[in-house]
Amino acid sequence: MTNGDSSKKLASTPPARRSVPPFEALRAFDAIARLGGVRKAATELRRNHAVVSRHLRKLEDWTGTRLVERTAGGAALTEEGRKYHRQIAQAIDDIANATIDLMKRGDNSCIDIWCMPGFAVQWLMERLASYEASNPDIAVALRPTEDVPNFDRQEADIDIRFDSHYGTLFQPSGAVRALKLASPSIITVASPEYLAKSAKVEAPIDLLQHQLLHEENFDDWATWLRAHGVDCEFDLSGLRLFNGHLTLDAARRGRGIALTNHYVVSRDLKTGQLVEVAGSKVPFEHLTMGSYMFVARRDRWNVRPIRRFREWLVAEIAKEQPAPS
Image (cartoon, rainbow, N blue to C red; front, side, top):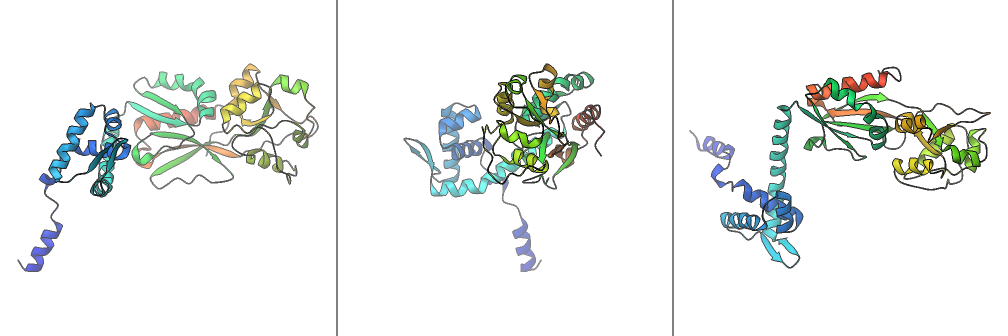
């Protein structure tokens, strides 16, 4: 063997496995570095703080390097500690993600679903029992949230999002796959009490004389009004509530008129707490401002729990409108 061949072989040889410290010590150090204290790390790891301290000392003895300085406020990484944590943090994340991925591949008994709160509370919950009845071997965990899960970290198996047709468009990465579930028409709603004491609405422009309820900004109403030919050169005003739940609650309390769709407000329409507002002389258009999307990891798209829930959800939505393409 030539010297060149010998050098190539040495360069490709992985580090000796015996140089890897005990993993419990690495987990303890990682938690202390992320959370800034031994007690906080102990809480996250569900260990006694003395045990976490012992693991840290073992790692420092193993490496022969002081990694953490104890302070009155908790714990601070030394310069070597910060450098070491930067180097190992991604590796620990990779191990955790690979382990979760392995566990998920072998588990067909449960699904974690993240879903827009309005859709989850007002529409999905009323129908979920039928899915559970036909799939008694699959446990469902439903989390109403506006947050988007990190599929790389396996935070959720399924995400049901509303993709607005204006603003930032939903662009799934190559690692996930998406299916359009429905593009509901936007409707205007208010309480019967509010409408009884307010001016009549004969055309879309009349809504400018009413209390309009907004979420984070005025974009939804501005878009809807412009689509109905109402000039919005001036700034809209009104109560901003930053959340669809609060907007509808304000409408129930007679505070004004809200924009929504039938999926989010179906229960209120059935009970009569809210009614649809429509122009008596100039009807409102049936506009859509976005679509509900079913999102899952591409490599898990057809695993049994996800496939069954997707097929059930598409069938339930098709009962109320034509099936999505």
